[in-house]
Image 1 (cartoon, rainbow, N blue to C red):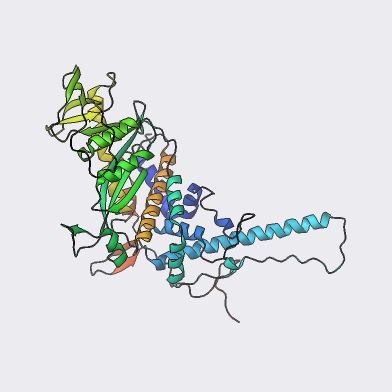
Image 2: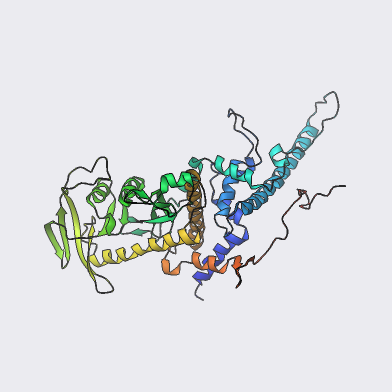
Length: 461
């Protein structure tokens, strides 16, 4: 019987998001980033810090879990944090019980009898775990601000698959990446407007602030490899120029015609990165060799007018490129330029490769609409960047789980089931009158502390 791939992937995502999501996501976190069982244990020699109920580790994990929820309110986040706190409290209690039992056994084996009262073996949780979580969202809001942006960036970096390799991630020995940009809407606050205000002819508009998000995804896994956020008046090419430094050697970039400029091509060639872009205009070139019909080796010279968005332009140089004449499925003629000069690679294969550039449009749609970051909710530039970074890291973690579950099967837009899953698994609905309701409700909100041994409310006597 043929394996139902769509059902397998949908079931795996369903298990991840609605089943045991904490366990599934925690497995993907490196211990150096999150160690929720040791939030209050400080390494030897490290300066003692305040023993908080809202720890940095648990807060970061809560932000990750919130990013996959439809309800992203602080109120819902506090509920998630309470669940994590209770889980850690139970685990800490079990660990202490085991430690005390071990101490009793070791002391019973000792032949030395000490004077004085018999030793008492008591179980005492850290103060941060003894306390119950307040339902006031102010404490959690402050805890989010305490999460360092460096930690969020490190989470994003470690969320990437390091050595992905299937029939779609690589092409003729190259590791394939795709780059593009998009816009995000921001909250209309004073601090965000100062940095992300939309201007027309230098004058600020009354519309909402917007940010420019530039991303590079890896073909074959659908993961985001790198990103940058700026205001929409910064050039996409300028943002992308800096991101090229992060790519490994022997990479291949698929880009649209916006990125067909001398500075981008020259830098990619200097760093040993192949590039494939459409030729957006008739440019002057010198013919070197004809490989076949509509397949030529050419050279282009440094343009007279250099880029104004660079403090220091690439060195003047002649660049050798391959110029390929193509016809789109709609019958439209266009030109592709690439630094791939190997004659053994046919021009038809290069054209077919470029058609997969559309994968990034699917990826950006998922990140913006499915991860629900088309509108960032944070009210300061620092928190907006942190919110974005954690959402993108969480998207990568989901992709990581999918990649592990489907093994050698590639990411392919027409068979991508993240969108289908989120549609089928919605737990927030709107009826005909506009009222919001849930598929499942946990009942009234907790208003009293919970006994960690029985998980039942503590009653006063």
